[in-house]
Image (cartoon, rainbow, N blue to C red):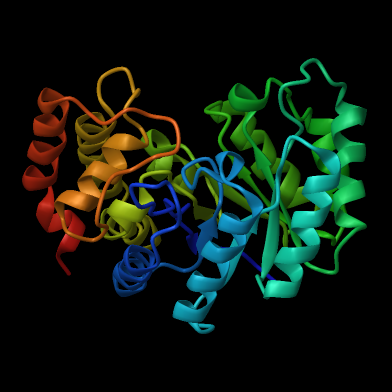
Length: 304
């Protein structure tokens, strides 16, 4: 049975100045993350700019990553696209390329879908593939919720391997954990909110999919290890340190969530440039803030 657990960071997609996938930077980033001890890699999510990339660039990224990973950890990838037929095409191509599971976001842009609408959508995707499907719950991005009663029916189906919950709603997360315990233990509940990693693990989450994980896998693993060792106070102290680091990279209003992340990776020499699809480069002042955060917490990023 396929079971997702541990640290599965959503990898940023390294781009060159032409906004194409940068192969050399991608290989360095994969090596950096593998050496940091990831338990899996999540490609083409929000942090990976999946919805902003052409299909050929998505598939090229997946091919590069799979050739570099060589089976050393699970690789999962988002198939989501605003167009239904493109989502299905992505599912088929990702299956052909050899990913271990596909990740699917609830429908976006067309808001106020019912729980039944969203549930039917996920089951239709699952019926199109032999791969396990991971549900990606991000209501702030999509404008659509996944009500708990519909989530429980999805959980009960062995077609679904788990959920990445990026709702930011801790009560919803704990409800997911309770439903998992009574419905199907094999279903993984993964926390995506960086500021609540330790609380999620202490509540029983199976693993973490933190947006900042491309840069901070070692940092996140310290939190994970502290919880596993029963060192609750240490885990919560590390969470406070993570929150301070998070503010330095993402900025006080979190508007630098992607470009700050890429700027930090470029500053460390892991990727060649911090290019994104849509965002303008950081100002000199904001770069200084990001670089200062990296220097302050460097032992947590590149240390043992």
